[in-house]
Image 1 (cartoon, one colour):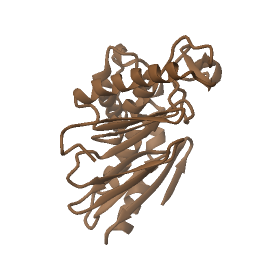
Image 2 (cartoon, helix red, strand yellow):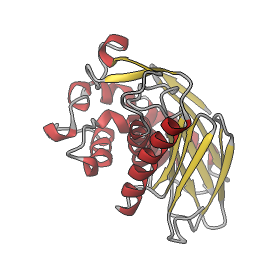
Image 3 (spheres, one colour):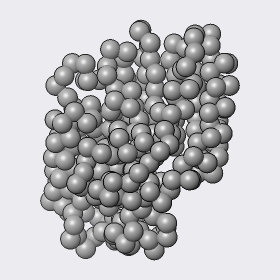
Length: 263
């Protein structure tokens, strides 16, 4: 099922005898999503260190997802796509007869599994890949970020794909790891203030990447080292389960040693 409203574009699928009823629940809950978010946009665009007061269910989930990263600069908007996917998924599976389901919000995906079910997903970037999540695995959300994506990035990663406990957690982590993949002073990278590209951006005048030219091998290694170091740090804190970083044809994997989190 395809649901679209403003900037929100969902692809939804349920498996099992209760699928038709689950779609009806998703349609009903979806009608409230954008209106609820729009009412809190000014606070959702404030840094988490400002302590924005948020009241909506999705807004609070966004704040919860970004909260562990304070005092680093991040706003609840870093988790918006994933939080919406989580919210709609909760309604989708709130009934009998669902063996497996997912909500894909522009590549940020929340999924549900029952015992014996498997979630298969592909990574379509410069270096394509795939992964499989079983019921026994703890991850229930996946998200991808990078400078080529829908949102602006402070870094130069072509793509960073993250698996985490839910889609909101994966969303913010992918954003911040992608920001960390960077060579701050390279003349081969073009940047512009975010506000010039999108006046209402939560990034304000921070410089975001608009083009990445040919990088030297040392620049590529340095950028990926920065990103993998950041990813390992948040994995050790339990904020993600695994990550795949891509830059100029090179791929780095950061995976947990916990069997329950390993794919």
